[in-house]
Image (cartoon, rainbow, N blue to C red; front, side):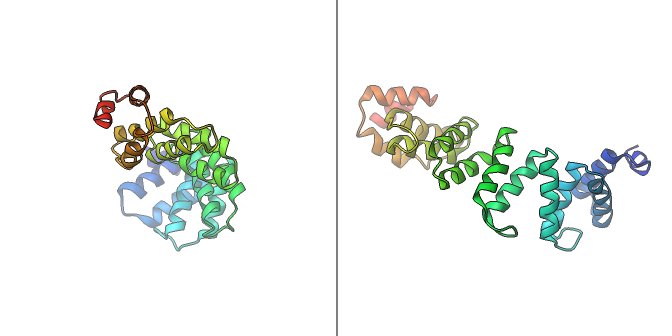
Length: 220
């Protein structure tokens, strides 16, 4: 059915078939052919997927410049994953010249579309532009989405007063919250903070982190 629709010129069916071939069937030439046709017709998923293959040389010769053009076309067409990839490439300067403002532009598009992986990168690059208050906002969004690296930055920034006023309760909250997502990277920092806080503050931080019993561990 899908193949028949693709043969009849259904762009989305052709894209779906190309993605299925890429993921489950070792048919690189057919994959690239289907995706190439759909990409030329403006299908953003095909553009982004073909860009991925071109970037890595899977089923086609490596062509990073074309890959970037396809990522941009897909991003401009509204594909948030392509926007995320494009933002990273601007930031890394691997193919495109390193350009942090453009990295921020596309990472913000991805972040607003709730591509959770984009939150820490967007925060980092905003911080690189000395836009700490906005960076803090995105770190907070990332932390609430379960991004441990965003939680660690929040803990550090609330402790040190970067982008906000010093707030040891919020700082400890986010260091403790990291345990919920399986990261113990904030434990050392949490122990250091506890020595500067009252028992009531420690218990409030643990409550906000959703781990009230941890307060007694740190206080003990």
